[in-house]
Image (cartoon, rainbow, N blue to C red; front, side, top):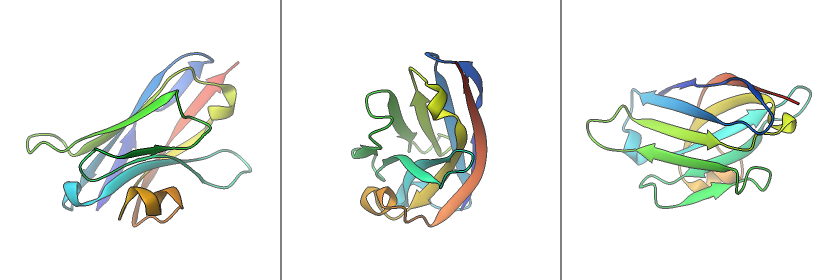
Length: 125
């Protein structure tokens, strides 16, 4: 499975961004999908995950209430998962990575089957 993330950029505090991740090379609907991030000098951390059907979502406490993860499983869709980030804070600055895994539960604990390349999010104060 290949994952291509996009949508990062430079935004002022309080602003919003929508990250996208396009999946190819596998059966998209059979994977839970998620986002992780890594800030400079810190370990990669879980941000959000969504189940295969889209019915179950999990968020890190640091983004809960400010973010929404969603996916489009329709046959004519581009096998894409999205992460809407609102009310961004400088501490949200990081490289954001798209990931695919077995379930929301395992992804929440950091177990990932496939990683995409990162997209940089920078929030200025």
